[in-house]
Amino acid sequence: MIDRRKVLAGAAAAAAAAPVLAWAQDAPGVKWVPVVGGKYKVWTRKVGSGPNKVLLLHGGPGFDHSYLEAFTPFAEKAGLEIYYYDQLGCGLSDHPTDTSLWTVERYLTEVEEVRQGLGLDHFALYGHSWGGMLCIEYALKYQQHLSRLVISNMTASAPEYVRHAAELRATFPAADQAAMARYEAANDIGNPAYQAIIERLYAEHICRLPQPWPEPVMRSITGINQTIYNQMQGPNEFVITGNFKDWDRWADLPKIKVPTLVMGAKYDTMDAEQIRREGRLIPGAKTWIGEHGSHLSLWDDQQAYFAALIPFLQGKA
Image 1 (cartoon, helix red, strand yellow):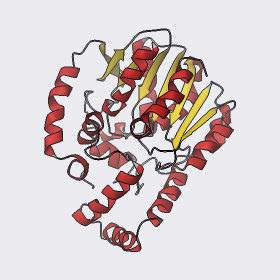
Image 2 (cartoon, rainbow, N blue to C red):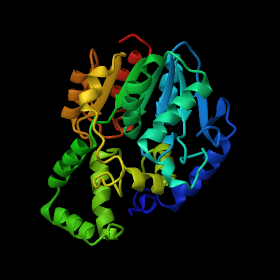
Image 3 (cartoon, rainbow, N blue to C red):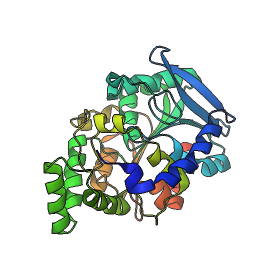
Image 4 (cartoon, rainbow, N blue to C red):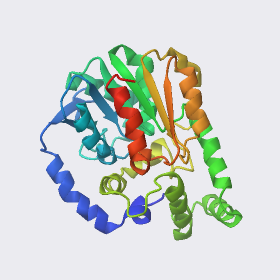
């Protein structure tokens, strides 16, 4: 199991995040929504106000909303009403130990429970990475509630993602590739040498900003629920062994009829050609591929990213 706290953050960043999280529990706009039939509750927070309401689904699985806080200044200026939300087991929300909860199907049900709990209808749904997977699932089952859909930095197929991850690995020096294969075969991916290679992959394809990365990004990384991440995805972005490893929705994308924007980036862990394919398969969808960003293009290609996203959420594009 890769220790992201050690690889990308460190104890100082984790400690700095704690007061922020404590404050956020009772911040203005916070609402706790019951899920799993009322057995647990999840944290949500409304920011801004206006006729265009947007529910944000963070990535991971196992991260929290923090890195999506890049939205706040852009949304407030644009008059959008956005809803941050920590998925169950993540961030400020309840943290059950029942591992049967960590499935795509159960999280899909949770998104609908959150929609109902917030009283949203005819709203825009935005999802980044794993949140984009949830967007696709939600649109296929509940699109009658949607006005708009944004699938950001997420392909429609886990096996295709695995294939592209292998292509990215193949661009690294032969010695690094051999070392990665050796540590993985020995089930020793916690080895510092392996972690150092992964860190270089992250710096190229996850976030291209100089480290330390922005505080909201670090807060999400240091707060990851590793159990959820490992169970659903696997040990890291380049080894996909979790329970959604066979997920594939290419054949179902034409069923999505709501106005949709698909977003990707040149240096992303997601293949830009797969993002373009999503745009072709979803009727009438718009596609944006950033020329300078990576998986966190909302941070490392921020101005261009939000220049494409905000007008779409406002219904102007």
